[in-house]
Length: 293
Image (cartoon, rainbow, N blue to C red; front, side):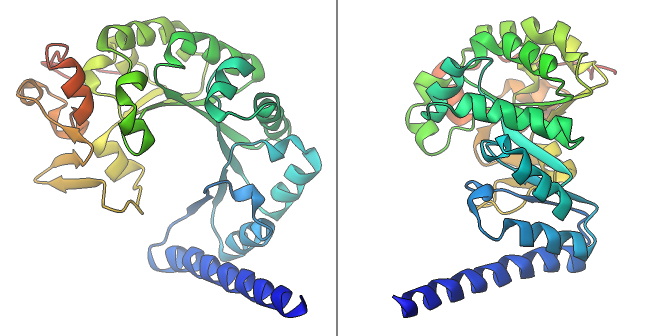
């Protein structure tokens, strides 16, 4: 038993050293100033406080945590993370009530835990971003979800299109939101977007987003180019994004003939491959000119 404990302790120590080295390497070699610990679920790691403290000591200007926020319902635990150096929390809420949220998480009580985690984070003055993945289970109540977040005091909302990969690819015909419904969903949420400081909208084709949203100064539309240049997201295997001659590509997307007529063609990346298979290209309406903010 003692030897087993020693082996496990040694393994944890080696893993901590490995992650610490990667954090140090990215800061020293690539001059990264922000780091986010994500997962899986990072809050189940016994060395999380040590990793955050290490990142702070290295000089990272912003240390973030990508979490389901369930453990952050403990104010004591969250205070310890903040004391170690945590400055930003990013979490996900799938709906404005437990029914929708827990239909996705499949964990009873997770909605209330996450909501309390969000409240605790906001009350401690930690910058808090809430993500909502937009698909068939969440789209119909997206406005109510946004209104609920506003009532909590959330200032940063991120809307993500469902990436057709893994299980989502296998069941994509059930999860995809048809073009008409998606356009209506965006139209419904237009009035509440100004209540947020920043709204980031990821991976949707530009042509499915209303000009009114494209013109909002607090709304950032981020697709293949934004993912590559602004977010600078790395670590995908195989590599997800690529730039060739100022045209940006996403391995999950394809451009139709109509896309080439759009002023956003180079940065959008196109449409999810199975989305085009499901709905064809009749819904694609190229923009002749960019919408000014």
